[in-house]
Every structure is written in C-alpha cells, then in structure tokens.
Length: 364
Figure 1 (cartoon, rainbow, N blue to C red):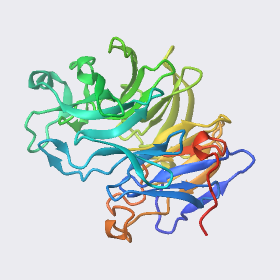
Figure 2 (cartoon, rainbow, N blue to C red; figure 1 turned 90 degrees about the horizontal axis):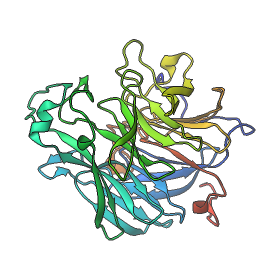
Figure 3 (spheres, helix red, strand yellow; figure 1 turned 135 degrees about the vertical axis):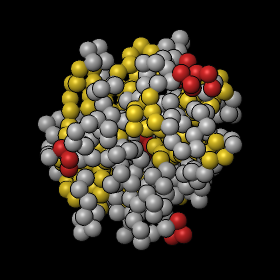
C-alpha cells in the first residue's frame, strides 16, 4: 500500500450490495485491545488486556481467544511474556496457558483442546546440515524449529509434532536473505476438514498439509512460487487460500492472495493490486473467504483491511486508525514501533453463534 501522511483512515469504501455483511475483528499487532467494528467502521465492542493483545479470534460462545504481545526480549527460556488467554464477552479471563516459547498461531479444536505453536531448539547436528540462510553477527549456530502441541484445558500435552522431523535439511532450504537462527519460522497453524495440520513456513517459502496420524506431509508446495507467505486456510472445495507476501520473490515487490488446488498445485484464483505495487505487506497479513465468495484481505503492515469479489473488485475497505507515533504504550493502546499494523483480521456474520443476543450498538 502506498503510504501518505494525508491518506484517510477508518472506513474508505463500502459497497453494501456486494460486500459480505458482518462485524470485523481488528487488533493492533503490538497492542492491548481488540475491537469489533461494523461495516461502517464503527466500534461495537472492545476487549482489553494489560498483558498485550496481539491477535485473537472469537469462539462460538462469544469468548475471545488471543495471544498476548511478547516483550520481544529473548531469555534462556524463550521469548519473554508469551501466553494464550481466553476472555469472555465482558473481559473476564476464563482460561490461560503460558509458555515463553509460544508464538504466532493457535487453534481451538471441537473437543475443547487447543493446538499451540512453539519454538524449540533443534539438535545441533541437524541444524548444521540445514542448507541456506546467511550467518548474522553473533550467531552461535543454535537453531530454533517449530513444534505443534495439542493441550487439554488443564494444560496437559496429549500430542505433539516437530517440523524438523518431517523436513529435509538439504531440500527445504532457508531463503538466502534470511538468517539461520530459525529453520522454518512457522507463522500459521490451521486444520483441514479431516483434522490434519495445515502449516506455513516463512523461512522456506512452504505451505503444507501434515497427516496427524503419521506426522508426514501429504502435500507440500511453495518454493519458487511464493515468498514468505502467511495464513493458509482450508476451503470447502479442498483448495488452500493464502496470503503471498512476496518480499523476496525477485523483481518488483508486491503481495497477492492465492487459492491453490493441492491436487494439481495450480493456482485456482489470484488477486493482485492494480498496479501490483499498490498492494504489499512485507510481513504478517492474511486472507479469509467469505460466505458470498468474496475474500477479506488483511494487508497487515499498513493496517489496511479490504474485501474483494472473485473478479477482483474492492467492495469494502478500511484502514486501521489506531496507532502511529502519536500514541504509545503509555496511552494504553499500541506500540509506536508497529503503528497501526494488524496481524490478521476476521469477519463474523450477524448470525454467527458468538454474536447472537449480543448488544452490538456502535459507540457514540
């Protein structure tokens, strides 16, 4: 997104006849608050957490499940301050799980358990064999991998999967422009209709489906086709929708939203900006298919959220107005470092179970 200090924020455009109506959940990627906004961009509900509220989504019971904002300070145990918290509609904490290695994404399963994503130090012998990346000053040779765990409400681990046990150090190569402190940097965790893992590895430009019974990939795709992607989601037709960030693809820099057919590895649908450079987010971001076939896209770095039709027409557009150098953690909302950036956004129809019977009157 081209940036100007004079560009408008808040609601930019709303084509009510073609947009998928509902309420959109927005949170600053380094903030303390989540806001549910209507199609006019008005805030209809808020949640606040002093620990930070970087990203979350609504459960069917109306609770918000979210990841706190870690301090970013590395300790011997991991990244300081990471936690998952479940908060009810009125802001009361009803469940929490804390681990300094928690990062990025999580899934609440139908059985009430939660899939969580954690960093874990890899065996040094294996780390030394991983191809690619560049050595940065001060690197020790230690390398973090990613682990997915299923935990019960009581925090008991009942299943786990380690990415490095299913990848090949010689063919799953780290991007030449990235450091070697992480092999994969898994930035998304989801599930398929059958409950298998749907994963995204930023460092190696790879998305894939992992059979939960065997721990092996049944589909793996991406190198040479996408660059540092985010947020793959499984579609009803068996395809995978994702946000292709594109920072290291070579040539002009731009982002895309893509729908991939895993059976053929062909692109079934694609959205790019016009011109392509007008749509770009170096990191974070996501894409979510709507009930009417449109796609809600979160262009995360500039805090722009917009909805496009299958033909690529923009029918709703909103720029997060919360953030920027004028605000600070002291003001209780956001970190100036991240400004108005949004990790990911979700839309909920008015009849979604989480919203039934709720007072969604916009703030005056």
